Length: 193
Image (cartoon, rainbow, N blue to C red; front, side, top):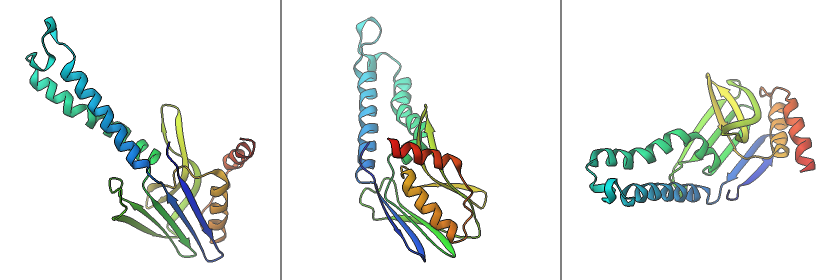
């Protein structure tokens, strides 16, 4: 996986975290483009029945359905995992009254368009560190919180030590940060790794 850098700036007035994801989205796009090209080549060039070319095998509608359906199926089944495994640049800001998250749009590799959400700190519940996404036994840890009944997942890939610093500062601001014995265990594992 490509590099990810977290820049933490914690003061007694605010917490700012910047996720510089580097070129991770480029690698994800290249992977899916390669996978799609491989599927198209396999469907077009593998021989059909009686050694006739498969695209002339009479099932053109079925072939078109497979050619267009395969990439869409891959995208829909792995969208959340891919977007968190290969994140866009992201910022996290919290002061004593509000919490804001901003993300560059995932397909905007030049980071020109950002989506920003702001929450009153009293509306934010259960800020924790843990799994933000899991796929076939592999998981990515990050920060999770609930606001208005919706769970938000931010800062995928943040290390336990940085997460502890972030959560400790948020707790001092009066945010709802429950005690987490799992984070303590991950910190011990991080020290010995």
